[in-house]
Length: 345
Ligand code: SF4
Image: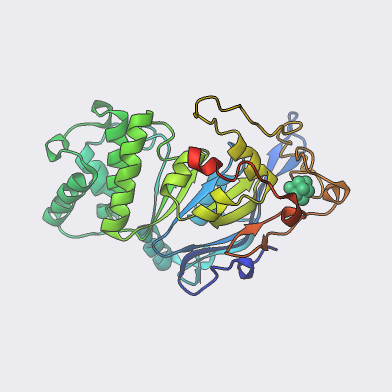
């Protein structure tokens, strides 16, 4: 297990700690007679410190969203624990869990799908306050006014319905709803991926402003390296349900150690005039989740794989400066040439 002891930021000031968290699903095969094991998240450990933005990046299907659901206790883990302010969220009783629901909120990718089309904008933002017994009717009304102002929505729109808003306005509304109960942690799960690029920038800036204004901590999940680089203090890279590299933003983008992160950065186009396209050729395709490779999960695609990689699974190890990497040869590979790729993002 990659325990939280491996995390150099393992101090008492964490808000959320994932400790060896795994999630296995059993999926019916085509004939429905037997079930096949699918490991969506495998032994993931990291801390999210108070006030930081922890970015989680990886390609689609790597387990990021499953991990966010585990962190929010929307699904139960197959192994491991999640501690919120020192308490295991999977052992919380009703009242503690109710408190947790106030403290942790989520902003989803598709604002339209996460809003009730039959409710007015005011009712949508008021609903969590009603459920949790927040204030009087007038106090809730005033709170909605404050939140509309904070996220850049006009209070004159409060009697409208979600379909009358643009995509960016709908995501602002989702953010207002997430903030209604004054949470400490907000999970942003691909929160800007469904928006136009110009709107993405507005929403990202808004999230950064709100973080300071409301003293928030973010778990920011995205497949987009540029977005993660913009918002994050520390970044974790996931591949095939596992954390393969974790470091603070500057360290990760300037001193990449894992060949998978290296390949992701190398794929970022260089807009400089005359720049020659550079890529790192990954062999094969992403392995089937039903049939995980032995040894290092990246070995059948890694251009640097050696014989021991086929049988020995690397452990996430601290290489200094809080830079963790799961690669047997991270010290030797000297992945140079793309170390400034982060500048292009
Ligand atoms: Fe590549 Fe081997 Fe490192 Fe895995 S352990 S990333 S296969 S060099």
